[in-house]
Length: 470
Length: 94
Image 1 (cartoon, helix red, strand yellow):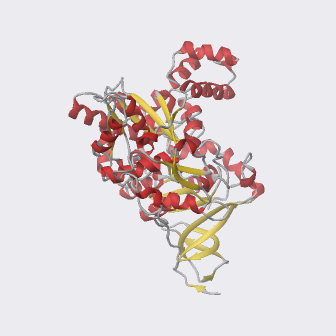
Image 2: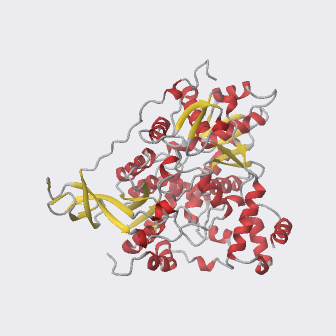
Image 3: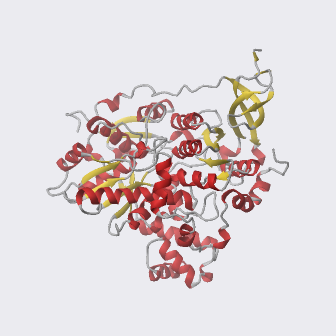
């Protein structure tokens, strides 16, 4: 154990040196102002081509997952769509990766880097599929692994889904640190990195995001080979932004410049993410607006100095869905498509149904992930847990859903509609956050250029908004 | 009190931060409670529940904390059947 001061303030004060030692990346080489850094250089200097990433991933049972047509679901959508509407819905079965989710892509390059650089082990903080992915990849590279998870509230109660994810981490041989509710997970991560000298397998490093690029790349190749065209839309469950960023970069690298990049999150408006009491009132532990909105509107709130996951840089649209709609669609996927998969991966499938209804029949909408399911993760266990915790569960119109109070499961497919999150509102919110880090009066031309690229707008729009904000 | 033998698979608890040591700007409900760690490993000496003990984790790290569980196990399940799900996807339901 370290003899250094391990108080909250002392550890946080040593953040930068701990990060540098645990990542082998000096972010100062890329940072040019409090809001601007050379993003493309940071990504490029990982030193990998997309083919290298695919080769490394193939060594540890990651990638080349199947892309399926959801024929019966598409038929059902066409029955409730206007004439000529009802795009074909396809799903990329990412549950086929080692550890059962796309997160294996995200962990794989970090594990390879850690082994190459001679680290004895790797550490990640995740209560989601990423923990199991890091543990599985570390196991295959002969590295020790520690996963930190936010598991239980002050009563010692944890959601079945998180408990299952903790089990999976231990199953793959990781030491699993199970923590109570609180943002001090980051403090604990830093403390553990310092104690062990292990590699920081943060979700938000360039290695993590570049690992996801193969997902977009494979979708492009698979659709191109089978239909001689690019996918018209790809729907991506959005939380921290890495899934969207990596997938979009892969699609762009494969030439899919006109493919609509659609984010989707479960709307948990009204619940506080750091609240001990609210912790067990939500049935989704990720893929929800509690992460999706703050990470989109300020990516640099993470456990690395600059976040390689920058969703607004790539996002064209953002769809919100309710918990009840996702549970409905998860059950429907099981019953009519014969695929039993975890709900979190079906968030984007829910939005794809809404999109497909509005798209032409000859178009293709791709849902880019599934995740494994089982005890704890299964939608029945999550709904049963919600009911035990006093949440009302019933069939009805999903617009009556109130996060933390009720889960209303649609009565029929036509009620699956979600709602649209306004993009410019998010972009404006991003600019306001940037202004908190550097006053608008001090923004240089280079800052405007970075901000414009980071929210997928032109520089003039940013300047206009900055004038209004000022 | 039951004696737990050295080498048993156990779970310990550490108070990582007392309420007054926690991060600033927490919601009120979270600020009132300590930040707590649970971790499992093999017990390094015979002990009773509630004692301070050392464990060796699966990756070989030695950690200290209060002994809270002997043979911690997973009992999470598929939950009680939620009948509202059962009719989804049946011919009359779509």
